[in-house]
Length: 411
Image (tube, rainbow, N blue to C red; front, side):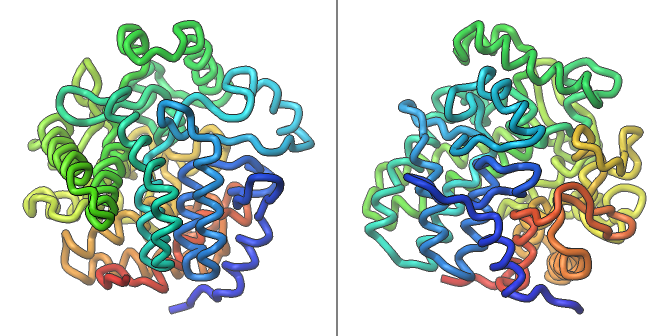
């Protein structure tokens, strides 16, 4: 099997590096995505741990530099103004959000990244400096987005997978593509701005209030990581809070999102489950200790060639979905193309929820896909060809799978 050279990973991260007064981060892609994104930076920090842990620390500390007073971590942080077409759009983006960051968030990978950086560095001084940010972010999610079943809701498509077919159902659109999709996304932001981003009023509007399986899976993983970090710092009471929240969220995921007949997890809204077959429904495989019958059902879907068992894993929508598409346009990103970050989560969880060869196969195919094609935004699930933005930062997660094979714990 082909492998990914370490020097190519380092060249990409350093090549995409943006630094200035008070910030140091890796842009997802210099040409297309020059700003800082929340979960992208968390993934970059995890990969930096193989190369330069001090850079990993700076990446995460830069995210905290613009944490909101209530604890929210924004999904986009603006440090520089780009040129070209994105430069022309930049004022529009900023007018819809805050002046220096967005008003929505992204899946809470942050506690996982902090835990990984601490595992590698052993730097307790750094941990004590960032741990309050971890705590306040998770507290904000519980306070502002928490639901009675223990899950949290997202309020905008960009807080999950940008344009998954799930959102077609939530927004009541036959096929959410192109300019129509963009108009809807900005319309939501304008509406939220009019109600002052008040979560209670956003819930009353109920335009987009979704208990997303992907977001909540990562939320549970984040709570469990924060629990371990707090416990290690002697904050047993706070660790207990996170443990109870994680347990409630696991119960909520099983009660609100699991569909016994389908053997699959679906997003949930006030109107019930959204029965759309996407990789989102596979994400609970990333949770250690998933109930065995449910893990086995998900693995069957994962390996079915008519659904997710395509040659180059894992298609973001099932082949069987009428909305499956391999279009590489910027408004059809998660309708069938394969993404490394989804594979990364699934491979790590599969090591505990399935026979070891299942996790190894997913990891090795992901590594080979990136080694052959390079670091692209997404990949064709039939051919493995890369597409979208080139030099894409979080596709270096394949290198993390290579250096830390699933199932092998390191500290």
